[in-house]
Length: 98
Image (cartoon, rainbow, N blue to C red; front, side, top):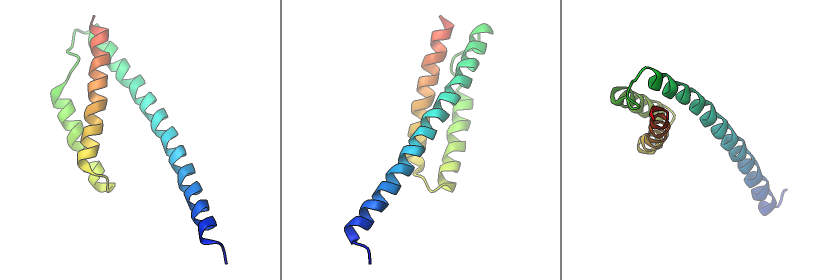
């Protein structure tokens, strides 16, 4: 029989390795997302469109809320996370407008 502390340490290591992989996926996914939103920002600047699109943002927040419920993730956390990302995207878009 395995030592309970050794088993716990092994499980902890497995969980941490999974977390590290998921963190990398999140970072690379966000980087890819920002590449696309920067392209959108450039297009908006070229065509004198506003950097913010409140109706699109509202749609995205509602969509993410549904996804988060389906994924068993706190919808308030998901909405706050997306709001943070949208704020950053708008900030980037405003730089293109100048």
